Length: 250
Image (tube, rainbow, N blue to C red):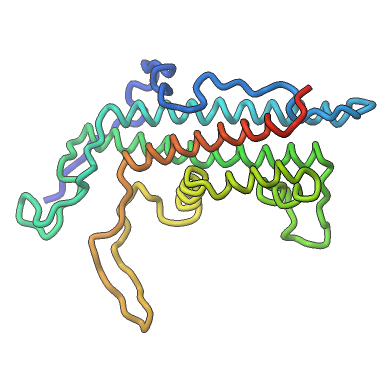
């Protein structure tokens, strides 16, 4: 017999203390340094006018990811008991029972948590892409119009900085290979392009030689997702520290 689960979208969201909910964010209280990407030799000021616009976008995106992190944490701390996300056999004799410690409230919390996790990771990477745009503008990095793969991005900006600001290039490369950055990007990519980590997958695996296996599935607990979110925020903070170190602030 199937059970009806009652979910309340955005439950109590208007009553939360967002300042408390972002207490674990490495970007809590962060302020974007003014003039970080400003050109000193912009005679007519048009380039810096454009840069100011992009810095505003960057600042708004930082505010947005902090806010969505806070909303996700609100539902996380309301309770999502998924450290043990399956038991076998189940409490009623079934082969496998998923989320054996969930009641309707926990399921609702999980539903809302996942919603804001999605927004967080999709928004968080836009911070890096916006930094890429600003680096292109600051250093007048060129795009090869004949190469459709040559696009403005954080990754391409780093590559092209090698001949423009080698020290910045080296430090940003180091950041790209940090665990915080890689885990954050991997989770963002899974959410955007692959199977979302917060849902149990089918458990079907295809091996070499045409062999197919069936298992319980893969799942990333809410605690692991929370740690990855904090790590990704930490990598963003480190990125700005690197930029402050190498860019001449006005």
